[in-house]
Length: 403
Image (cartoon, rainbow, N blue to C red; front, side, top):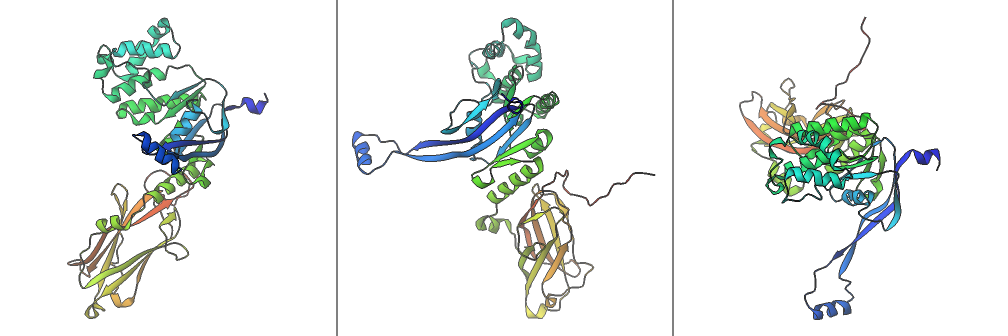
């Protein structure tokens, strides 16, 4: 074995996996014979993974991200040895413990205490070792008052907390973790974060699957992005992976015409908003922009001829996904009438952080006493970045040493 091979904890070599999805089950011999004569195989093939290839270094916190249906669960089970690939191979150098199906082996008719010792035995610990770690397991799970109750009386969250607490005692070279931080209350999740921080500091090899990009930024060294769009599959740096994952989700969750019709509230009068266009730095219509990039908002109005010279005020509001109003510029100090033509608002350097936003456009008379038209959160757009920024906005800043 070469030095380079010794540095590899897990090697995934060009693996592919296909499943056979059965059609409707025939309930009679006659139906089966008819299906055979028609050439119906009774199933269809689904290509879940195709030519997935990467290496995980020893001591690396390695992330795997992807949208639902991208094949993450299948990949995890291939790494854990639960499935076998159709082609290619997975080589694991060391002992791997999967935190995939937490609580497998639990007996609902036994007490929490009895299940701790049962799961400990499955992990290879003898009774003396379990006696030594029992109190720490219970304390971590925060279940001191419930250990003599039968497991069937536990909530699902309590069961997962107990299972996770036991699993953290496993003596292993590689951990495979699937979204366990999503369980429990905030206090328990912080314990999970602390445990992960300890793993990272001790250079334990961890394969971490998550939908939470903040945890990717917090823990991971490199990320493999998995998607139905096979061309994007591959290894990425943390900023690149976060940006790509958010963009893929934005494309998936784009506003459909029927949804947009429900989201746009109109109160149309003699002057109205005819069209709102979001333009990139080349002046082309766009739905996605980069942090620090030029963005233009072009507003075309419609109006009755008698209102051509009416002084009006246009107001904008930029909303984040959680409906926080991030900015509200308007034309109050800018003299404008509909006959002046389209109105353009220019942002020279977009300061919003990566994420999805919506734009509200409102039309008032000169003194704000009357609202002519309103498009409420009707223009969605996405802000992307290949760099890691924190907070809702990205400040244009400089640093210098103090005197």
